[in-house]
Length: 201
Image 1 (cartoon, rainbow, N blue to C red):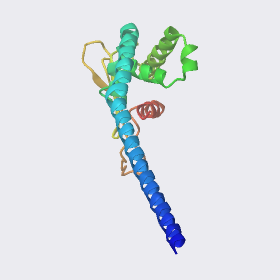
Image 2: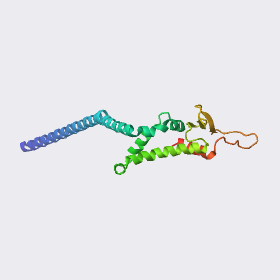
Image 3: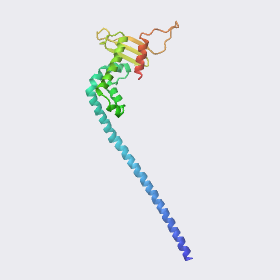
Image 4: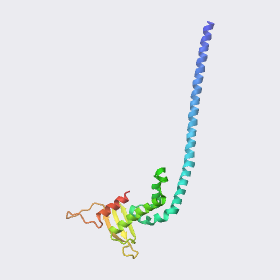
């Protein structure tokens, strides 16, 4: 009887020990989870308050250097492009920089920056020159383009007197012609399509 009691007591002791160990493991698990949550919170705090602002500052600093070197060349068409794209904040310099950031490191390493900027400048200049040519305007004419959901309107100082007048216009809203024939557009349809396509990019 004494031996049986001792065995039962030993078994109970083992059970209590196992319960204690399980509880301790549970506590440790909760402590580890809490520690992981704290580490994650600290990482998020460091990322948002230190890493991301530092990266943003560095990128802006690099853009400013790019702007100092190439901004004057690229910004001369900004006013025209803002009205053409119906985007008051458009900047050819910023657009060129953003496109540059989308390139892979390998592409950037192989890039000739002066040639890249020259290609951007040439692309904008060709776009503007084509508009003026199709409108029959001299290359030096100042042009403003407004393209939105209502259509396209082109104003230009065609005679050099400083006043811009509407030289072409295309409305996109539906028109009703009592004679059943569509009204003739005041602007070359191909040019209107090109302007609308460019504005929608």
